Image (tube, rainbow, N blue to C red):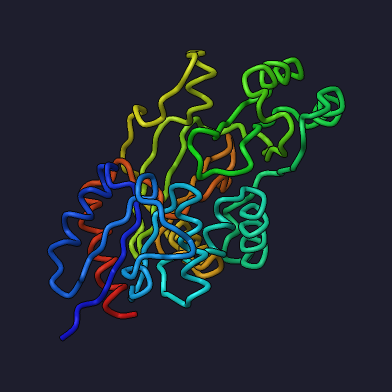
Length: 298
C-alpha cells in the first residue's frame, strides 16, 4: 500500500515542533518530507517534485515563504490543514477583527458572555492629527497590523496623549504604516490563553504583559519567561471555541481572553492560527495524534 506523502513545513528548531517531527517520523503510513521556511527556499518556476506530488502540505506559518507555499497549494489544489485565505485572515489583525466580530455577533445568543473590544485602524504619519483623534479614546493599545512577524510585532499601551511621542520614537519605522488599535480593557491582570487542537481544548493563564509593565516598568518583557499555569475550560469557552473553529475554518488555533473588572464576561482580544502551545504538558503527543488522524481521514 502506497504511503501518504506529507510535507510538514515549520521552523524545526522550535521545541514543540521538534517533538512533533520526531513522532511523525514514526508513523508508518507517512512518507514524511520536512521543510523549514526559514532555510529551505524554492524556485517558484521550478518547484521540487516532492511538493508537486504531495498528498497534503501542513504549514505552520512563520514567514512569507510559508505564505508563498500556501498560495502554491491553492493554485494546484493540494490539500492543506489551513488554506491560504484562512492564514492571511489570521495574519492581518484588521481582517481578523472583522471575522471575530462577525462570528460573535452572529452567535450572540450562544456567546453572550464574550465581547470584542472597540478597535480602529489609523496611521501615525501625521502625529498631531493622530493625537487629536486618540485623545477621546484613551487608554488604547497600539498593535502591529500583521502578527506573524515576531520581529515587527508590538503592543504599546497609551494612557495619556504624551505617550504617543514615546511610541513614535521607539517604532519610528512604522509611522508610515497603518496600525491596529484596540481599546484597553481594564481587567483582573490575567491573560487566559485557550488552545484548540481539533475537538480538544486546553487553557493556560499567565500575568497580562501590560500589567507586568505597569507594575515593574521593565525596558523589555520576554513573554516566554512569564510563568504559566492551567485553568479550567468552561462550557462557555468550549462553545466559543467550536464557533470560532467553524466560522474561521480553523482546526488548530489559540485565542486570548481577558476578564474585565466587576463583570462576569470576557473580552476576546486576539487569535492565532497554529500557536506555540507553550505550557501545555505532552502537547507534542496531542498535535501528532491530531495530524495523524486528520491526514488519514482526509
